[in-house]
Length: 534
Image (cartoon, rainbow, N blue to C red; front, side):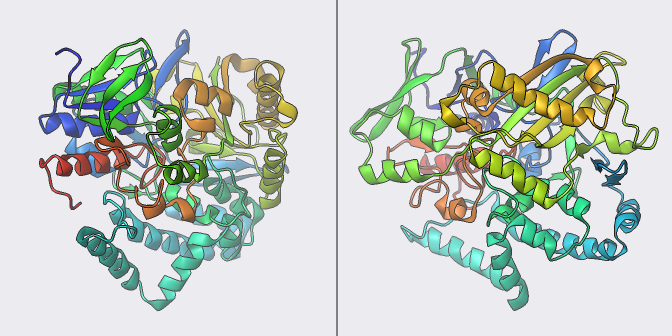
């Protein structure tokens, strides 16, 4: 009986934990199994050097749906997110561009670089906000399935069409063009200032195997703007204690509801009989039974790695293989002996409390992408650098600091079959450190310890295929009812009782918790324990 449950969730990432919370709260005896000795998946905090806590993979918080946080009472379980108030891009001429959270301060800063673009930024912000208003209500709804066209699918299609129609003719046309546009073309419609465009364009390529001139990257920018902190749309912040704070609060809520977590052993395969799931077999030989199994893994790992051959149709397997999951990102976590000096910035500026970049133009970003296409890491990379210990003192000792650096581009497979182990990983890290050191003369001397993670490292530890942080590209052809496979976009699978709750499903990646909440709602509906409508 100890190995019999009502539901098993495979993977203790934040979406798996979220789904587990809702299932356990509905009265299901629920188990979450996790291959690592720790929980959190990509939303994890770990002390890999004494005295410093790293947010190893995900590193900032905004996309977490407030509806889920309120529903699960995550604040009572320890979640605390503190917004940061700015960001910046260093300039090679010794100047800087400051991206202030305060609107008036930001207008003054933009006007300093381009008087024309100050007004253009207001038009840009209005357009992006309109797009956020259109898509945000869809995040916690299951997408319609045009393949099946059941009454609920017709109802959801009509809901989607009504929201689209309510925009008006011009906005409808602009929206269709926006969803298929490149982030470079989108920004060129508003701005003339290169450093402003370069600063904003990073949101269109982070975690994506595309360049700034690639169609579809304008939507990726929107994906990063649709979150909020304390009701401020588009704001970003730090989870106290690192991003593991999100996962720990979810785990606390799950355990309070009676759920059980078993860490340290991953899944070997899903156990199936006559087209139905009956449980899981773990890599230590244990078999655990349940009539409901939920995979928090990406769609490829779920069906290509852990389902026995012959269980699925050839057409479904081909569709899964076509789902694009490409590794393009690396990560550095750095323990610093003190605060780096940035001579080009005003003393005591709040800008260093946010995200810092050093890319000068759209063309520079595209050249970095060109190197990725050739199987090389970018020698002049785009980076998203933050020092969260400036806001969260729990991450380092007094006077010390923790820096996290997200890097584009780094390919999963290097040219000529080379390995990421050893010299290549070190050389990639050096390209990032050298670029930072151009703007901080004492930076290199402050490094006490660093963790360097290539896409291969991220896949090996976290289980993200090719290290793709979104569990699949966020392009228009992989959204809504196409995510991950047409006909199976509502968290179900061809195997009865086997569900998906990871970021390969609608609405996609980031520490959002929406896929986990949506999947749980569909599962409980199938079990007769909840309503299907969002």
